[in-house]
Image (cartoon, rainbow, N blue to C red; front, side, top):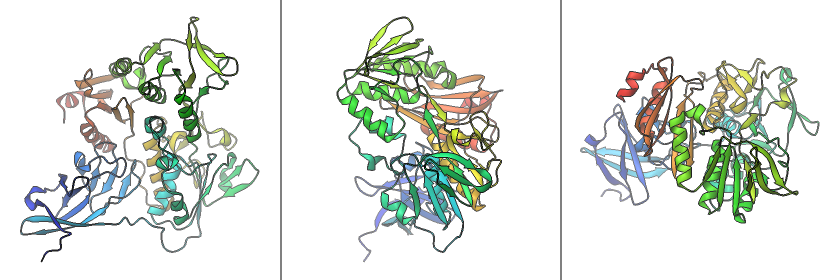
Length: 509
């Protein structure tokens, strides 16, 4: 008699190599079936990042690639290969009998502290996307030595991207933001030094001097200090009621202020600024966005996409004062309005400043590692000092432009762990980011700060399109609303260095 825990889910002929296949196990759970040669594998169909069905994505060589946010997993082991997910895929027992496929119990995850010992140590400065990914990836890759993570924040690592996307809009507490439970760091023997700020780096000694005068050194040093919000330098900008949104503490303060506000002004049409505006207007607040540019994101995403964001915000009730400069924040100790350069005063119960970020490199100015506000690194993320690495927002990789994206920093952390252990091959993935506003997502893959042409496939007005960014006739980056699976396919080609012409892009995949 067959064990009742096994369930028939497909015919063998349904599952072809290179094609993801999903089957429902019950109302809430589905399994992803993938074939590799003569072997069949069964994994949870929910991407561990935010639960997107992996069957919407791609099988690319030996990888399962999520079609939503580009996380990647090994097809035969389920092991996490690339962010933004942080967990492996749960596995299911699977077997084939007489042309039918049966799935059994789910296997528990196996991520644990590596066995053995290692006399080496790694000091990581920063607990954001890059720093936390570096620490976890060292353990995943088998490093059993000491790991020390130093951060000026009071909390353990958390997902900063959720602050403007979901935290403000809901009742989630810190645990919902946290990358891991507190016990994880104890189990993985990752030492967290919270509330500590670096004042100096000594590259030759691979050490960090902290704000209390103490010094921490290791065999390897990873600089992952990220970026800080740019401050608005106008009269009144230091008053109560003026907020930036970068940390959990700032998110808490802003969420509390929003609860009693009727009018708000957002200064800056950055992604943080527009995401925050979208959240506040959804809570019934009268929101005005002030920015100097005539079209948001025009330089990065092009005028067509920028105008789509304008329509999306105005259709949802946001007032846009584009082409405007701020002369001061009015109020007497507490902000009560924003005065524009033309004399207009916009009443406000609170003001949010979202005018971009600046890499945090002040502590390494005397080290010789920084240049023009960034840290040049090789493909393996090592600086000019042996054993000292820089990742994330502060890193300028192999002469390319810095990229200030959460997933990029995570992938830097993954790669720096491999570099330290001698198993890395250098960065290979095209940069990826996304923004979510008014239940609409825009995603972008590649890097094209100096694109010279664009082409659009689809309908920008209705939010279902791909836009290609070209440099000297070849594709450098792709953006999308509503065509995420196609975007990921282009990203896979960009990863490989494929030359995609304007004509090829216009034909489509």
